Amino acid sequence: MNNNPEIPLEELTEKLLRTNLKLDKWLDKSQDKLDDLQEKYAPRTEFNRWRNSQEGQEWKKQKYRQQNKLCPICKETITNLKGSHIDHIKPLVPYSYLALDTNNMQVTHAECNKSKGRKID
Image 1 (cartoon, rainbow, N blue to C red):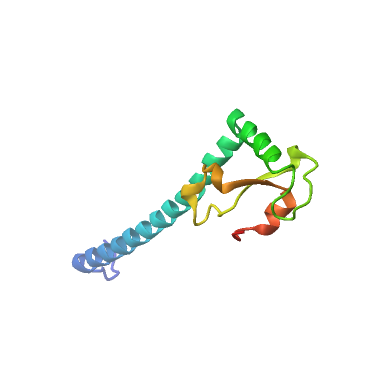
Image 2 (cartoon, helix red, strand yellow; image 1 turned 90 degrees about the vertical axis):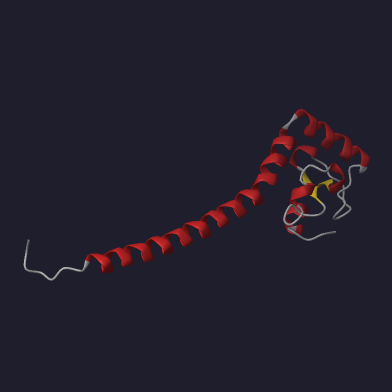
């Protein structure tokens, strides 16, 4: 052993336990944040999967015709269905439970949907 003063074992153990408790708290908070993020983005993933499916594409065409090819936000004609968006009338955040509810969807211009953001019509 060298001549350096050593930290007593009890003190070292106490420091280690305190550090371990702090780390556990940090990990719990981090896990909570991760859970929140996953909960937030899971509905978007489900919606994207549906939107890209045959069912989603057919719904979009039907809704487009039902809306008489008009964007419900700006009331102008949607000339290109392919470039249009499916908008959630009530946004996914905080209405994640409406992610696949077609009664909460409308076909809009891409620009109108983007400018609307999380506002509710």
